[in-house]
Length: 406
Image (spheres, rainbow, N blue to C red):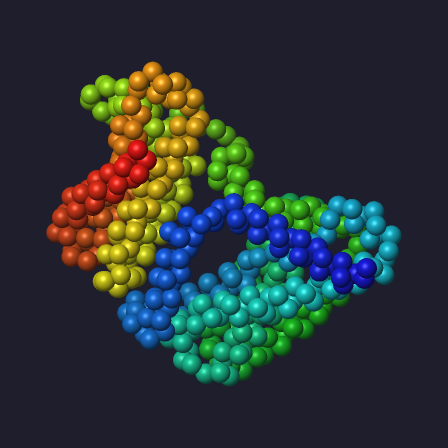
Protein backbone atom coordinates (compact mmCIF):
# COMPACT_ATOMS: atom_id res chain seq x y z
CA UNK A 1 0.00 0.00 0.00
CA UNK A 2 1.62 3.22 -1.18
CA UNK A 3 0.89 6.65 0.37
CA UNK A 4 -0.87 7.71 -2.83
CA UNK A 5 -3.22 4.73 -2.81
CA UNK A 6 -3.82 5.27 0.90
CA UNK A 7 -4.83 8.87 0.25
CA UNK A 8 -7.30 7.95 -2.49
CA UNK A 9 -8.73 5.21 -0.31
CA UNK A 10 -9.53 7.76 2.37
CA UNK A 11 -10.91 10.19 -0.18
CA UNK A 12 -13.31 7.56 -1.53
CA UNK A 13 -14.40 6.68 2.02
CA UNK A 14 -15.16 10.36 2.69
CA UNK A 15 -17.14 10.65 -0.55
CA UNK A 16 -19.26 7.65 0.45
CA UNK A 17 -19.85 9.15 3.89
CA UNK A 18 -20.95 12.51 2.47
CA UNK A 19 -23.20 10.70 0.01
CA UNK A 20 -24.94 8.87 2.85
CA UNK A 21 -25.46 12.19 4.66
CA UNK A 22 -26.97 13.63 1.49
CA UNK A 23 -29.27 10.63 1.09
CA UNK A 24 -30.78 11.28 4.51
CA UNK A 25 -32.01 14.67 3.23
CA UNK A 26 -32.72 14.08 -0.46
CA UNK A 27 -35.00 11.06 -0.77
CA UNK A 28 -37.19 10.37 -3.78
CA UNK A 29 -39.97 12.74 -2.65
CA UNK A 30 -37.55 15.65 -2.18
CA UNK A 31 -35.90 14.88 -5.51
CA UNK A 32 -39.26 14.65 -7.29
CA UNK A 33 -40.89 17.75 -5.83
CA UNK A 34 -37.89 20.02 -5.21
CA UNK A 35 -34.69 18.98 -6.99
CA UNK A 36 -36.15 18.15 -10.40
CA UNK A 37 -38.40 21.27 -10.62
CA UNK A 38 -35.54 23.38 -9.30
CA UNK A 39 -33.18 22.09 -12.00
CA UNK A 40 -35.83 22.69 -14.65
CA UNK A 41 -36.31 26.29 -13.49
CA UNK A 42 -32.56 26.83 -13.29
CA UNK A 43 -31.99 25.63 -16.84
CA UNK A 44 -34.86 27.73 -18.17
CA UNK A 45 -33.61 30.87 -16.39
CA UNK A 46 -29.99 30.15 -17.35
CA UNK A 47 -30.87 30.13 -21.04
CA UNK A 48 -32.88 33.34 -20.64
CA UNK A 49 -30.05 35.09 -18.80
CA UNK A 50 -27.52 33.92 -21.39
CA UNK A 51 -29.68 35.47 -24.12
CA UNK A 52 -29.82 38.74 -22.16
CA UNK A 53 -33.54 38.66 -21.36
CA UNK A 54 -33.10 39.73 -17.72
CA UNK A 55 -33.32 43.54 -17.56
CA UNK A 56 -32.26 43.62 -13.90
CA UNK A 57 -28.76 42.51 -14.87
CA UNK A 58 -28.15 46.06 -16.08
CA UNK A 59 -28.41 47.31 -12.50
CA UNK A 60 -25.74 44.97 -11.08
CA UNK A 61 -22.47 46.87 -10.44
CA UNK A 62 -19.33 45.05 -11.65
CA UNK A 63 -17.66 44.98 -8.24
CA UNK A 64 -20.63 43.08 -6.77
CA UNK A 65 -20.12 40.23 -9.24
CA UNK A 66 -16.45 40.01 -8.33
CA UNK A 67 -17.28 40.20 -4.64
CA UNK A 68 -19.46 37.11 -5.06
CA UNK A 69 -16.62 35.43 -6.98
CA UNK A 70 -14.25 36.24 -4.10
CA UNK A 71 -16.64 34.74 -1.55
CA UNK A 72 -16.68 31.61 -3.67
CA UNK A 73 -12.86 31.56 -3.64
CA UNK A 74 -12.82 32.13 0.12
CA UNK A 75 -15.42 29.49 0.93
CA UNK A 76 -14.51 25.82 1.19
CA UNK A 77 -12.20 23.62 3.22
CA UNK A 78 -8.85 22.24 2.09
CA UNK A 79 -8.97 18.60 3.12
CA UNK A 80 -6.02 16.23 3.58
CA UNK A 81 -8.19 13.45 5.08
CA UNK A 82 -6.05 12.94 8.18
CA UNK A 83 -7.36 10.67 10.92
CA UNK A 84 -6.60 10.37 14.67
CA UNK A 85 -4.52 7.22 14.20
CA UNK A 86 -2.09 9.13 11.97
CA UNK A 87 -0.36 10.62 15.02
CA UNK A 88 0.72 7.08 15.95
CA UNK A 89 1.62 5.66 12.55
CA UNK A 90 2.28 8.27 9.91
CA UNK A 91 4.40 10.48 12.17
CA UNK A 92 6.74 7.53 12.72
CA UNK A 93 7.05 7.14 8.95
CA UNK A 94 8.28 10.57 7.91
CA UNK A 95 8.76 9.50 4.29
CA UNK A 96 5.13 8.32 4.10
CA UNK A 97 3.94 11.52 5.75
CA UNK A 98 5.73 13.74 3.25
CA UNK A 99 4.41 11.80 0.26
CA UNK A 100 0.92 11.67 1.73
CA UNK A 101 0.81 15.44 2.36
CA UNK A 102 2.27 16.17 -1.06
CA UNK A 103 -0.40 14.06 -2.69
CA UNK A 104 -3.13 15.77 -0.68
CA UNK A 105 -1.89 19.27 -1.51
CA UNK A 106 -1.69 18.68 -5.25
CA UNK A 107 -4.96 16.77 -5.29
CA UNK A 108 -6.64 19.72 -3.59
CA UNK A 109 -5.01 22.09 -6.07
CA UNK A 110 -6.44 20.14 -9.00
CA UNK A 111 -9.83 19.87 -7.31
CA UNK A 112 -10.02 23.67 -7.12
CA UNK A 113 -9.67 23.84 -10.88
CA UNK A 114 -12.87 21.83 -11.35
CA UNK A 115 -14.72 23.85 -8.71
CA UNK A 116 -13.65 27.13 -10.37
CA UNK A 117 -14.70 25.83 -13.78
CA UNK A 118 -18.13 24.88 -12.39
CA UNK A 119 -18.59 28.32 -10.80
CA UNK A 120 -17.56 30.06 -14.00
CA UNK A 121 -20.06 27.95 -15.92
CA UNK A 122 -22.90 28.87 -13.57
CA UNK A 123 -22.01 32.57 -13.53
CA UNK A 124 -21.28 32.69 -17.27
CA UNK A 125 -24.34 34.84 -18.18
CA UNK A 126 -23.25 37.51 -15.72
CA UNK A 127 -19.62 37.49 -16.87
CA UNK A 128 -20.81 37.63 -20.47
CA UNK A 129 -22.88 40.71 -19.68
CA UNK A 130 -19.98 42.45 -17.93
CA UNK A 131 -16.93 41.65 -20.11
CA UNK A 132 -18.40 40.06 -23.23
CA UNK A 133 -17.58 36.65 -24.66
CA UNK A 134 -13.86 36.23 -25.31
CA UNK A 135 -12.02 32.94 -24.92
CA UNK A 136 -8.84 34.78 -23.94
CA UNK A 137 -10.58 36.60 -21.09
CA UNK A 138 -12.59 33.61 -19.92
CA UNK A 139 -9.57 31.31 -19.71
CA UNK A 140 -7.81 34.05 -17.76
CA UNK A 141 -10.75 34.35 -15.37
CA UNK A 142 -10.76 30.60 -14.84
CA UNK A 143 -7.03 30.50 -14.08
CA UNK A 144 -7.37 33.50 -11.77
CA UNK A 145 -10.27 31.92 -9.86
CA UNK A 146 -8.46 28.60 -9.68
CA UNK A 147 -5.24 29.97 -8.17
CA UNK A 148 -7.10 32.35 -5.85
CA UNK A 149 -9.29 29.58 -4.46
CA UNK A 150 -6.31 27.25 -4.01
CA UNK A 151 -4.26 29.87 -2.14
CA UNK A 152 -7.09 31.15 0.04
CA UNK A 153 -8.26 27.69 1.05
CA UNK A 154 -4.74 26.67 2.05
CA UNK A 155 -4.22 29.93 3.97
CA UNK A 156 -7.48 29.35 5.85
CA UNK A 157 -6.37 25.84 6.72
CA UNK A 158 -3.07 27.11 8.08
CA UNK A 159 -4.85 29.82 10.08
CA UNK A 160 -7.24 27.23 11.52
CA UNK A 161 -4.25 25.50 13.12
CA UNK A 162 -3.35 28.55 15.23
CA UNK A 163 -3.88 28.16 18.97
CA UNK A 164 -4.56 31.78 19.95
CA UNK A 165 -8.18 32.54 19.12
CA UNK A 166 -7.80 36.33 19.16
CA UNK A 167 -4.74 36.32 16.93
CA UNK A 168 -6.37 33.81 14.60
CA UNK A 169 -9.46 35.99 14.28
CA UNK A 170 -7.40 39.11 13.58
CA UNK A 171 -5.29 37.33 10.96
CA UNK A 172 -8.38 35.85 9.29
CA UNK A 173 -10.11 39.24 9.16
CA UNK A 174 -7.00 40.98 7.80
CA UNK A 175 -6.56 38.29 5.14
CA UNK A 176 -10.22 38.53 4.18
CA UNK A 177 -10.13 42.32 3.76
CA UNK A 178 -6.79 42.60 1.93
CA UNK A 179 -7.32 39.59 -0.32
CA UNK A 180 -10.87 40.69 -1.12
CA UNK A 181 -9.78 44.21 -2.05
CA UNK A 182 -7.01 42.94 -4.36
CA UNK A 183 -9.29 40.31 -5.90
CA UNK A 184 -12.06 42.81 -6.68
CA UNK A 185 -9.58 45.35 -8.08
CA UNK A 186 -8.06 42.81 -10.47
CA UNK A 187 -11.46 41.48 -11.49
CA UNK A 188 -13.09 44.88 -12.00
CA UNK A 189 -10.34 45.95 -14.40
CA UNK A 190 -11.66 43.35 -16.88
CA UNK A 191 -8.37 43.21 -18.79
CA UNK A 192 -7.07 39.75 -19.81
CA UNK A 193 -3.52 40.72 -18.88
CA UNK A 194 -4.64 41.41 -15.32
CA UNK A 195 -6.20 37.95 -15.04
CA UNK A 196 -3.12 36.14 -16.35
CA UNK A 197 -0.74 38.26 -14.26
CA UNK A 198 -2.84 37.67 -11.16
CA UNK A 199 -2.99 33.94 -11.83
CA UNK A 200 0.82 33.80 -12.27
CA UNK A 201 1.39 35.73 -9.02
CA UNK A 202 -1.03 33.48 -7.15
CA UNK A 203 0.67 30.38 -8.57
CA UNK A 204 3.93 31.66 -7.08
CA UNK A 205 2.15 32.23 -3.76
CA UNK A 206 0.78 28.68 -3.94
CA UNK A 207 4.30 27.24 -4.35
CA UNK A 208 5.48 29.27 -1.35
CA UNK A 209 2.52 28.14 0.76
CA UNK A 210 3.16 24.50 -0.14
CA UNK A 211 6.77 24.86 0.94
CA UNK A 212 5.71 26.44 4.23
CA UNK A 213 3.11 23.72 4.80
CA UNK A 214 5.64 20.95 4.21
CA UNK A 215 7.99 22.46 6.80
CA UNK A 216 5.24 23.04 9.34
CA UNK A 217 5.65 20.95 12.51
CA UNK A 218 3.78 20.42 15.75
CA UNK A 219 0.31 20.91 14.28
CA UNK A 220 -0.84 17.32 13.82
CA UNK A 221 -3.42 17.48 16.65
CA UNK A 222 -5.01 20.73 15.47
CA UNK A 223 -5.08 19.47 11.89
CA UNK A 224 -6.81 16.25 12.95
CA UNK A 225 -9.42 18.31 14.83
CA UNK A 226 -9.85 20.43 11.70
CA UNK A 227 -10.33 17.34 9.54
CA UNK A 228 -12.88 15.83 11.90
CA UNK A 229 -14.85 19.09 12.03
CA UNK A 230 -14.89 19.41 8.24
CA UNK A 231 -15.84 15.78 7.73
CA UNK A 232 -18.86 15.98 10.01
CA UNK A 233 -19.97 19.57 9.30
CA UNK A 234 -22.90 18.63 7.05
CA UNK A 235 -24.03 15.87 9.39
CA UNK A 236 -23.77 18.25 12.35
CA UNK A 237 -25.77 20.88 10.45
CA UNK A 238 -28.44 18.28 9.68
CA UNK A 239 -28.68 17.22 13.33
CA UNK A 240 -28.80 20.81 14.52
CA UNK A 241 -31.47 21.78 12.01
CA UNK A 242 -33.62 18.76 12.84
CA UNK A 243 -33.47 19.57 16.56
CA UNK A 244 -31.53 16.47 17.61
CA UNK A 245 -28.53 18.57 18.66
CA UNK A 246 -28.86 22.05 20.19
CA UNK A 247 -25.89 24.36 19.86
CA UNK A 248 -27.15 27.43 21.65
CA UNK A 249 -25.64 29.31 24.58
CA UNK A 250 -29.07 30.22 25.92
CA UNK A 251 -32.58 28.84 25.72
CA UNK A 252 -35.74 30.95 25.45
CA UNK A 253 -38.12 30.35 28.32
CA UNK A 254 -41.12 31.62 26.34
CA UNK A 255 -41.89 31.33 22.64
CA UNK A 256 -42.24 34.39 20.41
CA UNK A 257 -45.80 33.46 19.33
CA UNK A 258 -48.70 32.36 21.58
CA UNK A 259 -46.73 33.06 24.75
CA UNK A 260 -49.81 32.76 26.99
CA UNK A 261 -51.48 29.86 25.14
CA UNK A 262 -54.56 31.79 24.04
CA UNK A 263 -57.10 29.79 22.00
CA UNK A 264 -57.08 30.03 18.21
CA UNK A 265 -60.53 28.58 17.46
CA UNK A 266 -63.69 29.79 19.13
CA UNK A 267 -65.40 26.40 19.06
CA UNK A 268 -63.79 24.19 21.70
CA UNK A 269 -64.37 20.76 20.16
CA UNK A 270 -61.88 17.93 20.48
CA UNK A 271 -60.71 18.27 16.88
CA UNK A 272 -60.22 22.03 17.29
CA UNK A 273 -58.18 21.56 20.47
CA UNK A 274 -55.89 18.95 18.86
CA UNK A 275 -55.48 21.03 15.70
CA UNK A 276 -54.71 24.05 17.88
CA UNK A 277 -52.01 22.09 19.72
CA UNK A 278 -50.41 21.09 16.41
CA UNK A 279 -50.44 24.66 15.07
CA UNK A 280 -48.97 26.11 18.26
CA UNK A 281 -46.26 23.45 18.32
CA UNK A 282 -45.31 24.45 14.80
CA UNK A 283 -45.30 28.20 15.47
CA UNK A 284 -43.31 27.78 18.67
CA UNK A 285 -40.61 25.65 17.05
CA UNK A 286 -37.64 27.58 15.72
CA UNK A 287 -36.42 24.46 13.95
CA UNK A 288 -39.62 24.55 11.91
CA UNK A 289 -40.10 28.29 11.39
CA UNK A 290 -36.57 29.07 10.19
CA UNK A 291 -36.51 26.59 7.27
CA UNK A 292 -40.17 27.36 6.60
CA UNK A 293 -39.38 31.04 6.19
CA UNK A 294 -36.37 30.22 4.03
CA UNK A 295 -38.55 28.06 1.82
CA UNK A 296 -41.05 30.92 1.42
CA UNK A 297 -38.19 33.21 0.34
CA UNK A 298 -36.93 30.65 -2.19
CA UNK A 299 -40.43 30.19 -3.63
CA UNK A 300 -40.91 33.96 -3.89
CA UNK A 301 -37.62 34.32 -5.75
CA UNK A 302 -38.62 31.51 -8.12
CA UNK A 303 -41.92 33.27 -8.87
CA UNK A 304 -40.04 36.52 -9.46
CA UNK A 305 -37.56 35.23 -12.03
CA UNK A 306 -39.72 32.75 -13.98
CA UNK A 307 -41.74 33.57 -17.06
CA UNK A 308 -45.51 34.17 -17.01
CA UNK A 309 -46.61 30.71 -18.14
CA UNK A 310 -44.19 28.88 -15.89
CA UNK A 311 -45.07 31.11 -12.93
CA UNK A 312 -48.60 29.69 -12.61
CA UNK A 313 -47.36 26.12 -12.74
CA UNK A 314 -44.90 26.91 -9.96
CA UNK A 315 -47.71 28.46 -7.91
CA UNK A 316 -49.73 25.23 -8.07
CA UNK A 317 -46.62 23.16 -7.35
CA UNK A 318 -45.80 25.26 -4.29
CA UNK A 319 -49.32 24.65 -2.98
CA UNK A 320 -48.58 20.92 -3.03
CA UNK A 321 -45.20 21.46 -1.35
CA UNK A 322 -46.62 23.53 1.51
CA UNK A 323 -49.32 20.89 2.02
CA UNK A 324 -46.62 18.21 2.13
CA UNK A 325 -44.79 20.24 4.75
CA UNK A 326 -47.93 20.51 6.88
CA UNK A 327 -48.67 16.80 6.52
CA UNK A 328 -45.10 15.91 7.45
CA UNK A 329 -45.28 17.99 10.62
CA UNK A 330 -48.67 16.43 11.51
CA UNK A 331 -47.19 12.95 11.23
CA UNK A 332 -44.19 13.96 13.30
CA UNK A 333 -46.43 15.44 16.01
CA UNK A 334 -48.73 12.42 15.95
CA UNK A 335 -45.84 9.97 16.38
CA UNK A 336 -44.46 12.04 19.28
CA UNK A 337 -47.83 12.11 21.10
CA UNK A 338 -48.90 8.57 21.89
CA UNK A 339 -52.12 9.68 23.57
CA UNK A 340 -53.60 10.55 20.17
CA UNK A 341 -53.59 6.85 19.30
CA UNK A 342 -55.35 6.06 22.56
CA UNK A 343 -57.98 8.73 21.88
CA UNK A 344 -58.53 7.37 18.38
CA UNK A 345 -59.32 3.96 19.82
CA UNK A 346 -61.81 5.63 22.17
CA UNK A 347 -63.72 7.15 19.26
CA UNK A 348 -61.85 10.40 18.60
CA UNK A 349 -61.87 11.29 14.88
CA UNK A 350 -58.27 12.39 14.28
CA UNK A 351 -58.82 13.06 10.57
CA UNK A 352 -60.84 16.20 11.36
CA UNK A 353 -57.99 17.63 13.41
CA UNK A 354 -55.60 16.62 10.64
CA UNK A 355 -57.57 18.52 8.03
CA UNK A 356 -57.80 21.71 10.10
CA UNK A 357 -54.15 21.65 11.20
CA UNK A 358 -52.69 20.96 7.76
CA UNK A 359 -54.92 23.60 6.17
CA UNK A 360 -53.75 26.30 8.60
CA UNK A 361 -50.09 25.28 8.33
CA UNK A 362 -50.36 25.42 4.57
CA UNK A 363 -52.03 28.84 4.66
CA UNK A 364 -49.26 30.37 6.79
CA UNK A 365 -46.82 30.23 3.90
CA UNK A 366 -48.98 29.91 0.80
CA UNK A 367 -51.26 32.93 1.29
CA UNK A 368 -48.36 35.44 1.47
CA UNK A 369 -46.86 33.71 -1.55
CA UNK A 370 -50.13 34.05 -3.45
CA UNK A 371 -50.30 37.74 -2.58
CA UNK A 372 -46.72 38.17 -3.80
CA UNK A 373 -47.60 36.43 -7.08
CA UNK A 374 -50.56 38.76 -7.57
CA UNK A 375 -48.44 41.85 -6.88
CA UNK A 376 -45.70 40.77 -9.28
CA UNK A 377 -48.11 39.77 -12.06
CA UNK A 378 -51.05 42.18 -11.82
CA UNK A 379 -50.05 44.93 -9.40
CA UNK A 380 -51.73 45.98 -6.11
CA UNK A 381 -55.22 44.80 -7.12
CA UNK A 382 -53.80 41.44 -8.11
CA UNK A 383 -52.28 41.08 -4.64
CA UNK A 384 -55.74 41.47 -3.10
CA UNK A 385 -57.50 39.16 -5.56
CA UNK A 386 -54.90 36.38 -5.34
CA UNK A 387 -55.45 35.89 -1.61
CA UNK A 388 -58.94 34.29 -2.01
CA UNK A 389 -57.66 32.41 -5.07
CA UNK A 390 -54.81 31.00 -2.97
CA UNK A 391 -57.28 30.12 -0.20
CA UNK A 392 -59.50 28.22 -2.68
CA UNK A 393 -56.55 26.33 -4.18
CA UNK A 394 -55.29 25.45 -0.71
CA UNK A 395 -58.72 24.12 0.25
CA UNK A 396 -58.78 21.85 -2.81
CA UNK A 397 -55.22 20.61 -2.28
CA UNK A 398 -55.71 19.89 1.41
CA UNK A 399 -58.99 18.11 0.62
CA UNK A 400 -57.11 15.87 -1.83
CA UNK A 401 -54.49 15.13 0.80
CA UNK A 402 -57.27 14.45 3.29
CA UNK A 403 -58.86 11.92 0.93
CA UNK A 404 -55.52 10.21 0.41
CA UNK A 405 -54.83 10.12 4.14
CA UNK A 406 -58.25 8.70 4.90
